[in-house]
Length: 195
Length: 129
Image 1 (tube, each protein chain N blue to C red):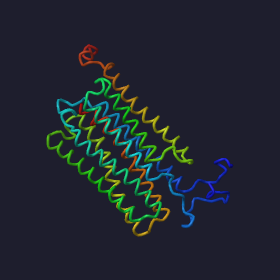
Image 2 (image 1 turned 90 degrees about the vertical axis):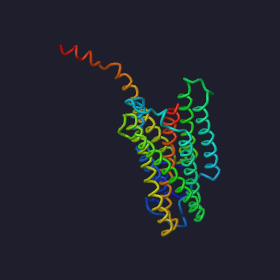
Image 3 (image 1 turned 45 degrees about the vertical axis):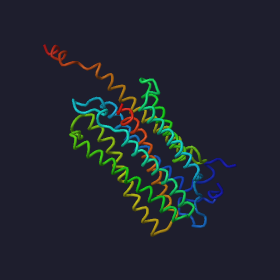
Image 4 (image 1 turned 60 degrees about the horizontal axis):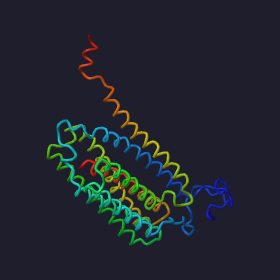
């Protein structure tokens, strides 16, 4: 048995996945700064509404389920394309997109409701931190949705080639990482904040 | 391992026939992950909304459940640490966790002590005299 270093370079798929994983970790570190900001500022409501008055757990629960099932179908989509089952891939990937879009529309309606109640990002330090943290996650989801449209087009026009499947792998890593960030966000902002 | 034998292979596209091996994951990996994640999410909501846990211990309980769920996502969805080529991924993850812990715990620690060590406006007025 050769030592791993003597076995030659790793397959491209492993190298690409590793590089993208490094990017995702740096993205998580970016989020950690905003998590720290929120944790420091969550009590600074400047006489405005607090999380207890603003957050509804039912809304957050539906968003959580959307994102979790979206992550699941995304994993199944990658699995299907690895096995060249293209129609199963399209079905799972469409579900991923729809659930992600549902999540995003729920989040935007929550934001619009908060702004309409006079609890916009300029109301207090707490709300500034809230909108930065949750808004950055929502921006990532938006980017992911746009990215997924390009990936479907590539799969349709080029077929499930190696490089197309590597891009799908990167997308699935991105999507799963967003779900991990949402777990932290749900716990810190909604579950702890609504009490 | 056979496909990266001693042929001096570089980072180029493979022949379609010798396609890169699929992931070691299966349908059941994802389904088990989904099941665990749903259980942990439900547990989090129950802990947050009922008096099942002693009230001051609820944030700690929620944090434990969240960390457990992140672990489930990492193992079952991202397959960190489950494939043989994954050592580098685990090392990178460990470094990421270190930085995140430093940023979050460090910020909270410093900011909590900052309030205690700041001069109040009254004290500042006194110093100007």
